Image (cartoon, rainbow, N blue to C red; front, top):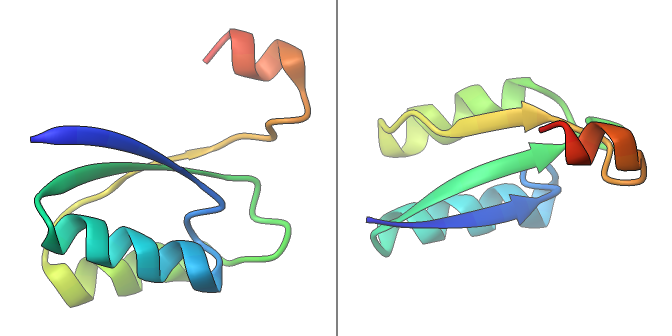
Length: 69
């Protein structure tokens, strides 16, 4: 299974993209800072597909955090 990184994956567009990627055989890895989204969306994605999705709360504007991830 190919992995793919989805930034903002818990927002409206990102979450729908994650579901479609999972349906297409990809393993999405979600990075989101939760500024315009909610962690409950992750539960919704799991409920739709029955698949666990990797999620990391990360602010991409923080170089230190990105480098140490």
